[in-house]
Image 1 (spheres, helix red, strand yellow):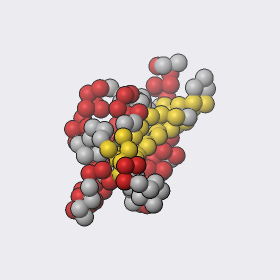
Image 2 (cartoon, helix red, strand yellow):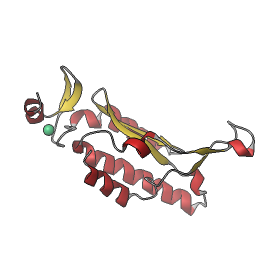
Image 3 (cartoon, protein in one colour):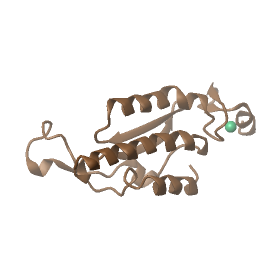
Length: 151
Ligand SMILES: [Zn+2]
């Protein structure tokens, strides 16, 4: 994704796209206090958003919902190490993949799955127009114009 568009998302949702820090792991999974905080570096920190500009609005909507969840957690007094944080955003098999570290509500998990397996498969990854999944040389979701222009 074009760097200016990525920067816009990072500016709009500063808590969800915060710099990597330490992440609180479920204390029921790993015992020992020293093991309950993990380094939260993720692919997004090295590679940025790995898909086309056309999915900007879709990613914007999911990111806004995640930022709202953080606001709810903050209101409940949850520590920063326990907030969800973006881990990776990329294209895979023609669809969006949106990986998050940390807790999310069932409703938001469902929204993400829907965007990955339905929403993104109807939107041109390159320009954002209505598109469909193509299974030619590459598996990708493009509109008719972009499919012709980039053939
Ligand atoms: Zn297009």
